[in-house]
Length: 139
Image 1 (cartoon, rainbow, N blue to C red):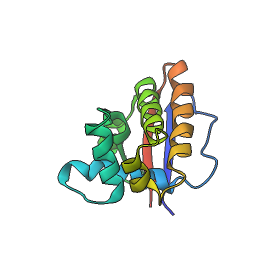
Image 2 (cartoon, rainbow, N blue to C red):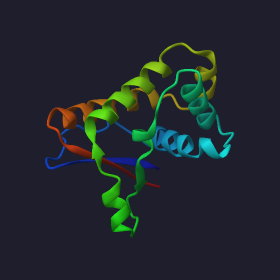
Image 3 (cartoon, rainbow, N blue to C red):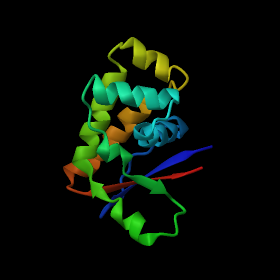
């Protein structure tokens, strides 16, 4: 099972995902390859969000494998938490908009919107403390 790991510094966030975070890992992964022409339904959802809704998703796409041996890369992906919270909120709102294209593209990933809301809460917690946040995953 794929797992998204959310870390904050200097203080660890007390919030956690309420369950399996794999839908969010798959969304982030396919959003990252959308620009290369991926035709996966989650990549297509990303295309709709970027073009129709003009969402900038850069903060969500800053992640790496937790077991990456490249310590410089793992250090580089730390980012301010507040912008990530805003992006997660915007993506979550767009997914809940009733857009038929998005509904069709994400129907097989029912936990995606709730997971984005949980990620937003974690990032907001960290942002309120002017902390940094890092997203990594395990497959």
